[in-house]
Figure 1 (spheres, rainbow, N blue to C red):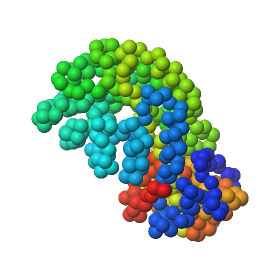
Figure 2: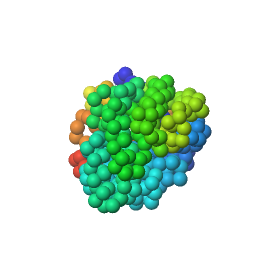
Figure 3: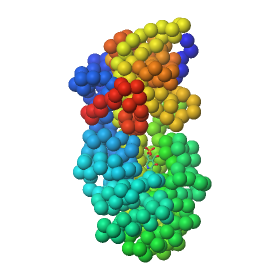
Figure 4: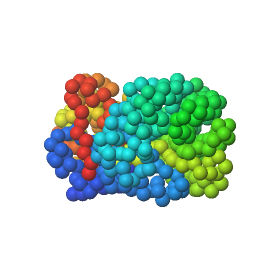
Length: 410
Ligand SMILES: Cc1ncc(COP(=O)(O)O)c(C=O)c1O
């Protein structure tokens, strides 16, 4: 059978006694401790290493926010608390998660279209910054603030006329449900300030899952130019500018990691020469998958091995109900293989071509197609990498009643 390549295994994973080790622990020990498979394992070592790389590359002036939508596991949020400058949330459910993890609401900002009144009230009462997505939302926030006697902290999310080139998901450029069209921002910002809100500045998020540093540098430069221009038109300095993020993770064969050094160098240059409107502005990036994606591994177990018309199937107890993205059904047009491995035989020679599938009765439930891997049998553990972001909470875990996977931090 012709093989299909698999995605690149992230750096920092090696073998102990021939087995995949995650954060220095053998996969079989982690599974035994969890008491069940499938499980997601998140590695503190990887989380720390990524933050260290970022801090080393970025100017001190640029803060890093963690968008918890990527992975809102309590242990992950708590681990990130001392490492990042702020947290971005997308719902009152995520607000509650930051509160449960003891995050100071002054470090939290809330973006997302369609915020309900009860969500706005919870955020205003807590003192979280609202990244307002429309004039209507700003109006509702101001009147809720008046009713509860608390001035809302308001930033305006801008829908810029440019996008992050090459990003997997574009969040700017043309008609969008996100943010306020750039030409309408000055009037709204002036209103919000006049109505007595605590003015928090602008949020400009242009896209997600971009691997091309040049495109990211271009978008960041456009964001800074637009923010300076808007600040001039508003007639007030920006206390804060959330510059968005969009740094991607290499999931597929041929994907290359983002060139962080190039992005850092370009930011150093820009930050040394900021226009007057941004001279005292607090700047931050908003990153999700880049911080946590490669720190997570999904482990599932081979339940059956069978051959159909000459094709070998490893049927696992996992699947798309936990790892929708790896199955190719979450925002991809052509299915390609995520990085996968036989965790229990991590350094063995790859000499078997197999299809790794899940336990759901749908042909969509595929974890790897025609992958060249070491021979695996019933009981072996399979690892799917890049599972630290948009895995557990971005997959339909209720589908077919198998239930969610366990999540552990190691
Ligand atoms: C406003 C906002 N912030 C953050 C993110 C996180 O993106 P990523 O996990 O790709 O960094 C997204 C993703 O769509 C987003 O829309």
